[in-house]
Image (tube, rainbow, N blue to C red; front, side, top):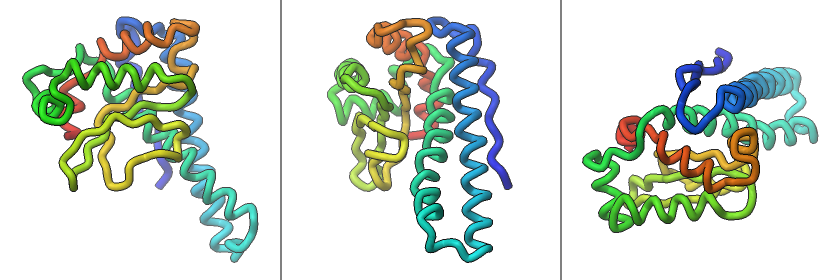
Length: 190
């Protein structure tokens, strides 16, 4: 069953994100969905044809993580937008108090992680086994994910996520992102 792009058009009109930026970003996301499906189909055919020992098969296996994670990270990113910030009385706020000393301390670290030089993602992960939260820099879609951890909050810091509206002012983009976090979604992921 092929993957289908989710509809995030309800985010259009969100303060701090222009319609142009969002529509361009949705198009990029749809490309990840399309490419995930293509890679899945080609790999299935190669398996059927007995071509699993080829360099092409190996490269597509490696490429699959890039396309699939590009799709899922964008779904998590768009899915955690459209709100008015972290619910200070919610489940996540209580956990942030325990692990970071409070919402403000966590936010300071999350913003600092997002402001680092480079392109990638910032993720707030929950390690269920250790019952801890971590802010993590993900350099590429398929690199630096914490094994066994659940992504709770995702912020895209590739230039396509902000340059249309904010040029090189990443801090201004981060400000708009933080103001639009959907705390209920994050609490649900926790």
